[in-house]
Length: 163
Image (cartoon, rainbow, N blue to C red; front, side, top):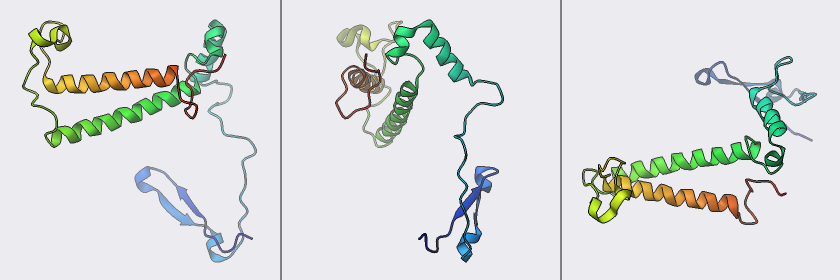
């Protein structure tokens, strides 16, 4: 019932040397696919991966936090990945805006008498207008992220587990 389908195998020594190779199914012979008998794991012999061991230790040391999803969990790693992807997006948007003159001149500094300690680097050296705009954008993203973790919409993935 499969018809005449060609299967492509990719053997990668290095990504730059990956070459597709047609199997004999492309020439009319039937090739049976062999399913693995068990899922692949990261374990090598009797060694437990560091992440799994760390989570087991965390669950033993802080059971009340672990049952709520706090700590290094799969959900936390997923959210971390999302934040990294968003960070790259912001990076590229900032570069685009800077390249097209949409951000103010970085040599113009904020006036400390108007902005107060928000405009300083900690040693009364003011920050530039450009840095202030990027800082405020990041603060907005931080609050959206906190709101998504504390009170997500019903369709969103929840960071923490239900009690």
